[in-house]
Length: 201
Image 1: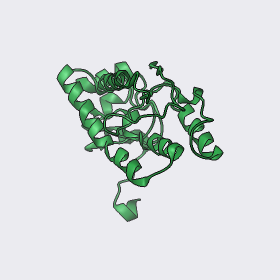
Image 2: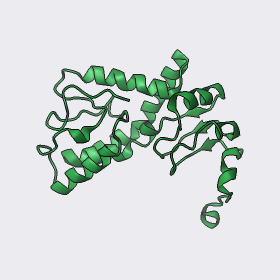
Image 3: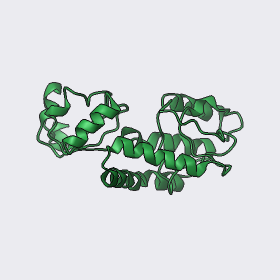
């Protein structure tokens, strides 16, 4: 990394206090906490790791008070779920990439809600998820949040291997809100989605 990209190598315990623009957690969870937040000098946190905030309410608020822009993990790293969903229904690269590119727009909406309502970006992403769930109720195609792995997958399109891959991926996301950016949200086919979406945190 150092030779190819000119990266500066530092010890793990030094990384929080570096004078950088973006802090990007991409491996361990819960590393944004009461001990590390006072050290962070970056103005933006944007990474691919799951569960970056040790306590989403408390540490989301501490970041807001410190004027650090936090990109909710389950939004910014939604690409894996988007890809799995598209594999389940019949993969079309153009559609998948359009949805992936819309992650940017979803984040902008979240930042706008947070700024307007003076709340954390975590709270804003929850509100946006709730809005999309309500919008999807009664349409026959359900925007989902919760544990899709508990819903029947046997009628879904795709091979047995695809379904098992989807089940494993979605089980790991259990009880996490999902914001999939495709013109407001991704729609799940009725054969693989409950018509009364789970709305637990």
